Length: 351
Image 1: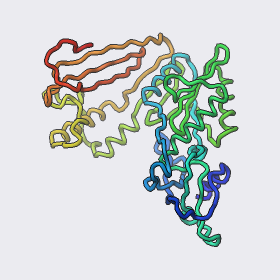
Image 2 (image 1 turned 90 degrees about the horizontal axis):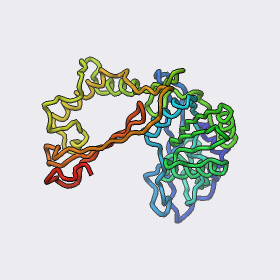
Image 3 (image 1 turned 60 degrees about the vertical axis):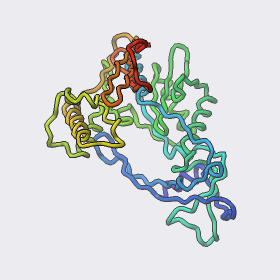
Image 4 (image 1 turned 90 degrees about the vertical axis):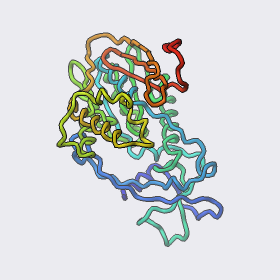
């Protein structure tokens, strides 16, 4: 807890002021957690002071809250490209990343529990930078990091969480997911320069080669990269008590055409039959825990796209479902959506 507050002082997050009369003051609380690795071993004990963001008032305490976050498909494409170019991907973790985000609004918070300075009177903290729990904290951090990277020569792709810098024939790619950052380059020196650049600006820890990220287990080998969700799947099976159940080879009974394999559509009013279908999906996952995606170093990097739709495929409301699939060599990205209107003919179904 003291280490957390020491970071506040180093980053000049706040200043102690007299409690304002006509201003909302947000409460704070301590959150404790054990940070674990893919072997479920405790790596670090963390104490974090967070603001009670649910007490914030729009326009007064916050305005814009949207912050860009990398999609899981973008992470997979990043890893596929790294394997294709045969370079290693590294990971860095920014310590208390949100404490670096500059605030535009006037925000006050209560003194942290157990560290009140009562002898100074009725004082509160006025925030200069964002605090975890604030609604605008993710956006403030992204804006700060984005400005810093732009000032140092990085450019953004269409996916604005992907940063890129070119040095002759060498390229450095950086993918941002809140306070977790992965990066790699065809030139190892560019990786070292980027690491030193970030450590000179933010307090962070180098985590070495990427092995575990957003639930993905990553194995970077000489002839390619293998990613899987073995740990996530095992945790899911254990959570719902399916360890002793036998596995099945297909995720859904082919006779259950009414459900079409999309259990999520029935979350608002589920029946016993839907629970049975969900359990079968878990039993299917149990039988393929070690299955993953393999990105070889050899081969091309060609993108192929396909699209199609059925005709009145939904047995519930007779609506059609459109779907697309893009294949990037060994990786696939897919999307499906039920159409808004009921189809009266097959004309234009594939348009």
